[in-house]
Image (cartoon, rainbow, N blue to C red):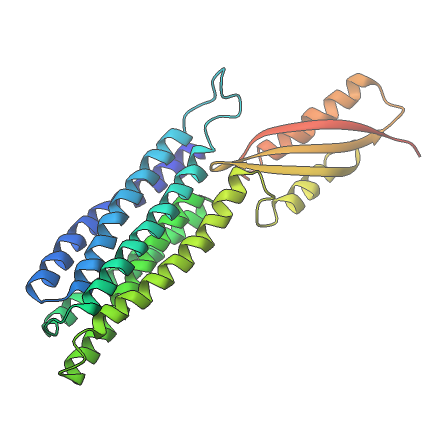
Length: 292
């Protein structure tokens, strides 16, 4: 399961890298020829997307490495660490766009060419479709890094949409409105910063072993309580390790049974959870005696 999920994440990330490479060239060229710094700034963000997607790619590959003597829980933490780096790259790209947009606003220049609108429309559609594809895969394989990378694509779509509106305003408004697309890029960069902050929080939570989102705790309780010999469960702690989970669970059994029987029940609980296709890589069971 881990191998399949990692493979899906890697393939999706590679698709994003190739598409961003093409879009960066198209937007950069169109921005230079069409006199739109906002479009050039958009190309800069696509370039940063290539960088961030590459980090996600290698982060996923590293996180999929098997356990070794120095990493008994595997290398899964490389995945949320890659997500953190991606959010920082996203934030940095927004700062660059803000700086350059302000410079362009303060510098008189001609209005952008009308053909840049066609380029932007193509970019918005492409990046939104790419966002939905990557986000869907990231959600299905429970990858924080892949989902974070998908929001790079959504941010690019937002930036391009804002620039589209700005260029329309500049062309319709005529003289005195030449910087409308630069103002649009400035507003879009603030949206990107907001997204970067919102994406940074869950990535850091995963690194800090915060409680995973979703209902995995409830599912663990339900499955464990179905095992013959289990009287009850308590103190379920789940940590996310890359694309998998580590579970620590206290299980109550009849206090009058033998140690051997208690050991057998704990293994039965562990086997049940490991075979449930929940993405659980390790289960640690602590047996508690239950007195009637």
